[in-house]
Amino acid sequence: MSLRIAAAEAAANPLIPHTAELVVGAIAFGLLFMVLRSKVVPMFEKAFTARTEAIQGGIEKAERAQREAAEALSQYTSQLTEARGEAQKICEEARTQGAAIIEDLRAKAQEEAGRITAAAHASIEAERQQAITSLRNEVGTLATELASKIVGEALDDQVRQSRIVDRFLEDLEKSK
Image (cartoon, rainbow, N blue to C red; front, side):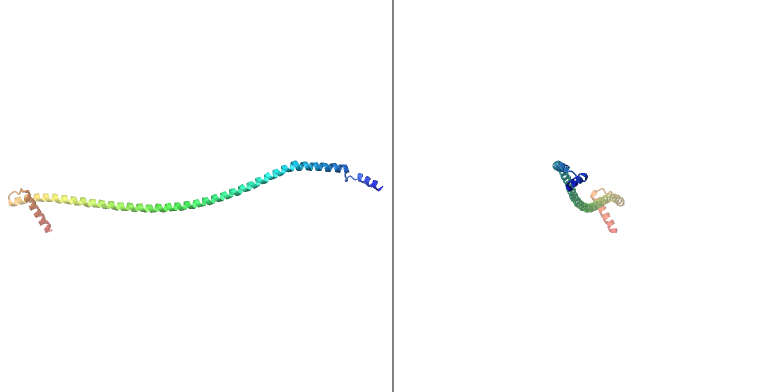
C-alpha cells in the first residue's frame, strides 16, 4: 500500500513531472541544442570572429596611422630645422654679398671720382696752356706794337717777334 500511496501522492504533486514528459522534454532539448549548436552558434562564432578581426584591424590601422603620423612629424621637424638652417645660411650669404656689393660700389665710386678729378685736372691744365698760349700771343702782339712805337720802326719779322715775346715773358717771370 505504501506504493500506491506514494504513486497517488506523486500524481497528486504538481511539481513532479511525468516520466513521459521528461523524456519528450529531454529529446526536444537535445534536438534544439543540436540545431542551435550546428546552425546558430557557428553564425554567432563567425560574427564574433569578424567583429574581433574588425576591431583588431582597426587597432592595427590606428597604430599604423599613429606610427606614420609620428614619422611624418619627425620628418616635418627635421625639414623645418633644415629649412631654418638654410634660411640662416641664405641670410648670411645675402649679408656677405650685400657687403661685397657695397664695397664694389664704393670702389667704383672712388675710381669714378678719381677719373673725374683727373679729367678736371687735365681740362684745367689744357685751359691753362690755352690761356698761356693766348696770353703769349696777345702779349707778344702788344709788346711788338709797343716796341715798334718805342723804337720807331716796324717789327714784322715773326722770328724776331717770338724772341722779343719770350724775352719779355722771362723777364716777367723773374720779377715775380
